Length: 324
Length: 142
Ligand code: SF4
Ligand code: FES
Image 1 (cartoon, chains in turn red, blue):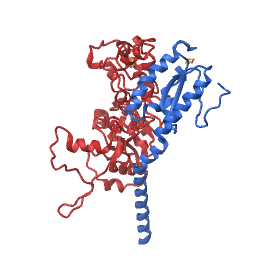
Image 2 (cartoon, chains in turn yellow, cyan):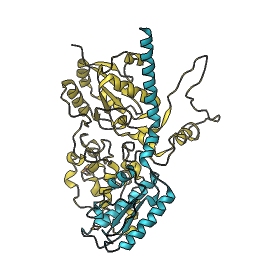
Image 3 (cartoon, chains in turn green, yellow):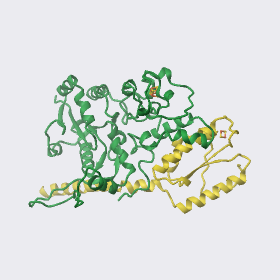
Image 4 (cartoon, chains in turn cyan, yellow):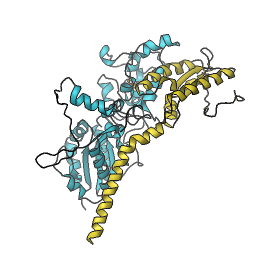
């Protein structure tokens, strides 16, 4: 019997997800033995026409990381969807929009102008910008178009499973491969991680306050952090209560609060609104004069509460931006 | 309250206490096409659950700032302390808010989502056209 075919692909991402696949270390050899890798741009040299040549559904599983932000990424998502039995959104960007999704707060023109003209490190007096089409030496290359909106993978094509994390942890990746190879799969649309809040696996849980009254919020760099106590007792925003577990609480074990990369559990639709709700309920004070100064300790609520998930949030994007 | 005539453009959702208003509900209402959301709560000190309206006020303050950062104008989400006995006030607040929303124009998030996604639908159409052209070419070869 021929081995199941697997593809890895990356879209708008930083490369960290690819690193996790490599982080499987010796275990990757076990995976490689059992599968045929048919596409992995970061590590192996395949061409797109190799992919085109495959029959529809011939790839058992494609792990796609990165948000969808350009016409080329859309085309690849559509093509890989067609060629794959299971399409898996791998990592926070494909799952929720990720860090690139924060661009959904800005106008595309402002982003392009900053990056090609105004950024302090850019010297571009002619204000040259990459063109979608141009002709040079008789050749006419095309470049992908940057879209106005950053999207999750499932806002572009149908997705079978999600592996969360920025990046996903090797243990989740390994478990996903085991499930895929054995065919022992949960219902379509599942996130392949536990469906409980991070606090459940956090060693600081014992000190999590049942009743806290925040008199101030401190950002992690503003004070020395107690290595054992729940961050909430220290007045530090921790996304743990609104975030899915399965990471092994690596950040809180490393004395940093959770920033929410696993996204919400299945019972929460909007991670940002959820954490806003639970933090604010516990702010001390009953009048605007008492409450407002405490809330000033969260200077950037969008960037704090939707750090990995603005495109998948209920509003998706700053609503008054141009779209064409 | 039940005998009051609401303006026809108002949809009333009753909850036990303003402390039960999950900010997700507000976003969900906007996402489904509401032009604005009015949250009514008992006057300070009068909440049956003691802290509910204070919780709402705290949530509201940060939600307003966050919504501003996401391009939603402040008058679209409003918090008012109105007791069950203040029928006239309910009416005047609703009328005032309706006027403000009319001045702002429709928010129409469902329409916005459709507009935003035209850039992807365009791609889907392109892909379809390509497949159709290829199939045609194959047919022509036979
Ligand atoms: S530190 Fe964060 S994740 Fe850990 S128990 Fe406290 S809130 Fe939950
Ligand atoms: S009962 Fe809590 S606000 Fe009315």
